[in-house]
Length: 361
Image 1 (tube, one colour):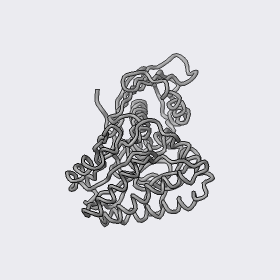
Image 2 (cartoon, rainbow, N blue to C red):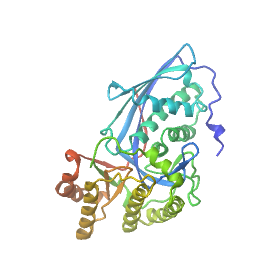
Image 3 (cartoon, rainbow, N blue to C red):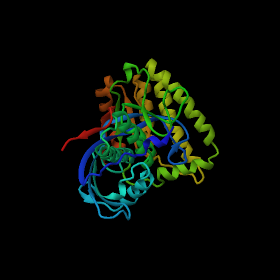
Image 4 (cartoon, rainbow, N blue to C red):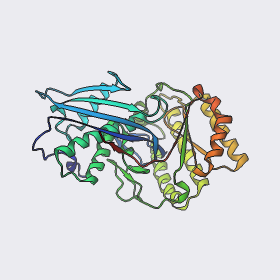
């Protein structure tokens, strides 16, 4: 891909000040990305459901400053100034300055909040970086009104990836592919793209209920986990497996075979955690209650013939996936058999959404 097209060159005059607000959704990968190279590039292709209700809402305010000595950023999270997030934003700005050369010209205030509890096992870095990138692209469009809608969203995904890899999948589309794959047209390692092929009606409005097994910061961050794949004994085989699973998922999505979907998605989740457990140093992010929930889901599926399944992110919490037509039965199952394994009985009901949205002031 020619990265030159992402460099903003047409700057006639910078606005003195302004603000905009965007929301971006979290996402849950069906085929996982684990392992990266270069500047936030994936070692294998991934595909994810975009969530509807679990999202980040970010307001970006900016005012022109006297000098260009450095980045000027103030971060407000849930109504309070948060210094902990600032270093990550500064690092992000350092990565993207080549593409947005106006960043040092402004004092920025980033006022952000999630619609879900922070550290609840939902990819807040993905939705957060995607929302911020959309705000920055809104600025670019103000500077260069000729920016096309296609370029706007492609560059937003490109920038978001430089903040958090999976954020590339949190901009636009209900099913998003990130990473180059020979069977998916226009797929690439630099941006997420909306899945371009036929999707069976079985997957319309698919449900995702997130069971919060454990809140709080993970013992091992995803960034560290990705780095451990560089010398992992099974890394290359895993990357080949993921590429093969993408090929299988194309067929599953077209045919609507839910049994094959269940098998592939659960296998992907367990493989992700197997990579963690066989890293050096090795570690385990699943908790005893994670395993209890998984076994309960398997037992329920065997007894009822339900098409419910689970997937896991890089943490202890469980995403329960199921067709919309099973919603009432599965929610009753969760309330009666699974909620006791959740921290303080916490779970979040969600379903597949379609991506970003601008909030008008």
